[in-house]
Length: 407
Image (cartoon, rainbow, N blue to C red; front, side, top):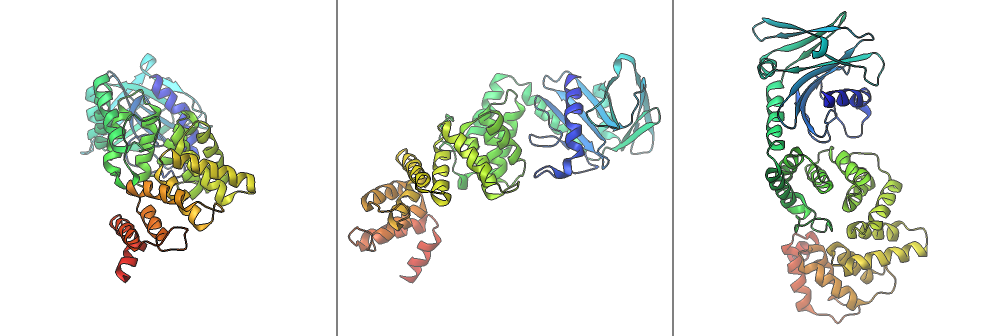
């Protein structure tokens, strides 16, 4: 019952302000299985529940070991009652009523005025009845709330499937962690043991399913929290903001700082805040994350307030380029050529752009082609120009495709 109490006490204040939560959309009147990032999600148990428009809510909690299931509700009220009446109204109109009292009943006062919570354990038979019923009414003296049970069968079954994963032991957990890594790891995550998947190659549905199952297995690694956030973001799921916030601010997972900074910098799922993005990139860079260092370098060059910041940005970009990060190689090479970094070395630009192009960076291949037109410090080379223009076009670069069509 401990998890139920924690959920009721911690979540009610969030529910009261749910409409203001960044990126959160509250769906009323229908049961849902709670996943990471959802309003009523609680790590370590598996839950399904429903929220009413007055922010009363009912929730069914399955423990990770599969031993206990409990039902509870937070309803309007000021005084506790010694007993409650639980009534299930079936689809044929018949009712099943029971009274819960004494040690069977848990009562808590959530951190919100005018609300009380009651909870109690259910048998397997009771769970089946809940899933089959039309609605559930909880009455405590004059206090009463009726919760529709639409969607409860699908939601509770999903919680049961997650419960099976968490009860599967270390081998099942390791299997799902490996599957999540394979589907959602960042190719340049210094903490990851796998090669990773480029953003454009990620399948959002596959990655999300794998990482949700890794989450359900329990003892969640910071890496898995970040990868689930990345999978959510790939699918345009606003829950990415909460997952990446936890991975960065709570877990201090290095590359998560860059991911969260990107959301703040673009105003994705939240209000655009460049100061917050800058702060996050500084933290990620301090932890040794190459991608954060690259992003911070770009920010300092593009938005720097003076020569010292621009010089620091150049150094950070160069570090990332020399470490083999293709976007840094491409940008550094391009900016050497176009003068953004001041007087540039065309041979150094050529070297970085070649390395990025060989990794499949179509934009780098196109920039490399431009070096061979002339006026770049390198001798014109029509064959090299055409070679890299075709490589860029093969990678889908629109400017290269247009140039080839004109040629």
